[in-house]
Amino acid sequence: MSPADLVMQSYGRCCASPTFFDDFYRSFLDSSPQIRAKFAETDMPAQKLLLRQGILNLVMYARGMSDSKLRALGESHSRGRLDIRPELYDLWLDALLLTVSGHDKQFNESIRSAWREVLNKGISVIKAGY
Image (cartoon, rainbow, N blue to C red):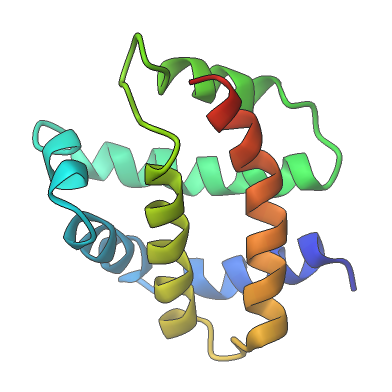
């Protein structure tokens, strides 16, 4: 099974958990005062829907989808717009993997490795837009 397929199955198990996205944002916001500040005025229910789609876009890119959606995300998160510095994506990924590990009952090191590989491919496109 490809890393992207492993991630899709794992993500499906996570999305079945009603607290997955809340738990992710709790972990992510706790990871840095700078991140908390970035989300101070955020509509969190809308943000959770964006996150759900964003993760899917990252996986679809790893499966061969065009990078246009990720480049657009990179532009919106760039220095001149939301100003999301590249190193903050590392905190994002760490918080996501921590949350996945708590919600995917089949989580193991090969699934962790697949998530890192698949998401870092797309995160590099987003970071490049900074």
